[in-house]
Length: 252
Image (cartoon, rainbow, N blue to C red; front, side, top):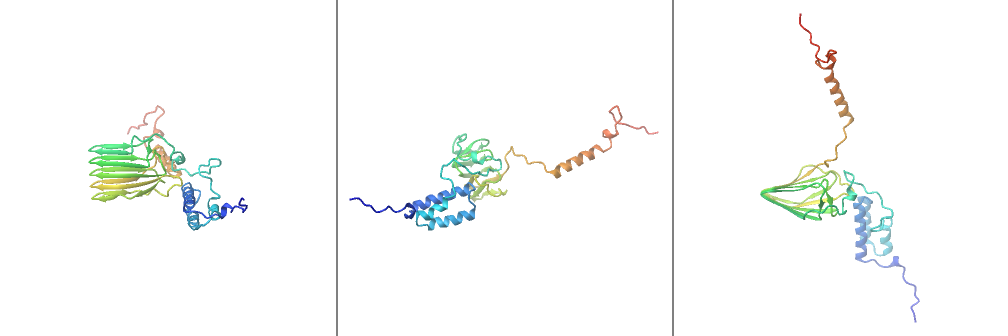
């Protein structure tokens, strides 16, 4: 004899901790992609952790694309150079290794290279330079672990990249002088950690080499005014003879 009782509708089923965590993970991705602002994220996060059934969880992601969906992608805001969406997890040129070591020498990582999820940099009586302005990123969040012993490591990041400096300095310092500005939605997050002993790790914010700020209208006006002033000075073409040379007058 078969059981003819109607099955309980799926939305009425109780949700598990794993179900709630899957929803929370989608909400985190939506924030990183700029689909939700922080206020919306916090509201939905609280609702997700207090939900008891699928019916309560489903509305929290109803207006978000399914994981891995490419049918109707929404615009993702790009970074300062307009290329972040294609530079994170895109599998660009691989780094030669996830470690760089300078012992009484130096190392450089610059240009078009891929920053792995975790990168170790060591400078002992030496120096190192990590330039991330034109780099690709294996993941949205990367960790750069620096050990500078009587040496120095410089890290260059473009504006808009979120930077979290957590290193410890012992008779040394982890220094971030410039303000990277507000993080760009969809951009990478760089965590700088490690130890500086009689050494230093410096994080600098610099625009990409290819990005040249446009000349302001005021600067152009000043430049034109300076050219006009130079043209009116004595000895210029305004006081030259028809032959092209200076129009010199002899004293009587």
